[in-house]
Image (tube, rainbow, N blue to C red; front, side, top):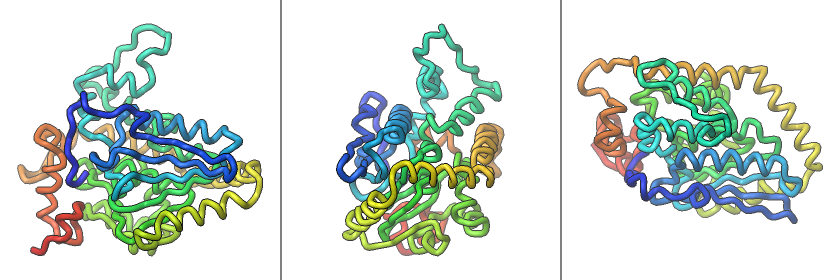
Length: 327
């Protein structure tokens, strides 16, 4: 989100360029790489669908036991391509494509029009489905390890919450810029579960990002190392996971943990978050100084978030550049 340019739609890369995948059958370790560093690794809607498909394939593949998830460049990522999402408000075909309904053989499908509750609720509810690419790791019955660094915001923060293990560099920042304006994210329930209620409430109500040290203290992270040690440390954990127990045993263990998460209401929480998120259009600002999402999209959301940063103490700011400034 912070310091991120907004490319024209025609310049957005193909999903296969944004979500890279490779595997090593000898070690049974696969790697998913977010490859859009010039846009802080923001996935498009089609890239998120590819991400879900890649995980579904790895889930079935007998040559995969562990998946490492990482980003190219200095950051894991700063969230989804929000300008692209907002373009969908005036482009029903884009919404249908994200719902995998653009060519499903059932004939013409008309997306719910603006002004209906279903206009927002349909896509929000879709995000609770693992095939949408937001909570795809929840159905993944192999071991997932996120390599966190730099910005870990928005959609990328979802992946950190849903992963089995998270190895982080000491310069990583975690949070969701949406907490400052829209107020919601699809993984609200899971963040409460993974961070603890008190600390997550602090993140939501202040809108500030948490450092790697703070997230480790929340038991959200498994290990924090310096940036130059990150890849080697992640590799060490991946090899340890891959060398122990058969794939069948991993599958059984993941089923146990999935049942535990569902007993705690993980999927119910996803549906509940979707319901509240879809009601964002009914939220009225208290003053002209409030950060308005729709106006910000038109004028440039990155710039709006950066301007909003100045209202907060340096250690509460989202942008690394703004955090370094002294008031």
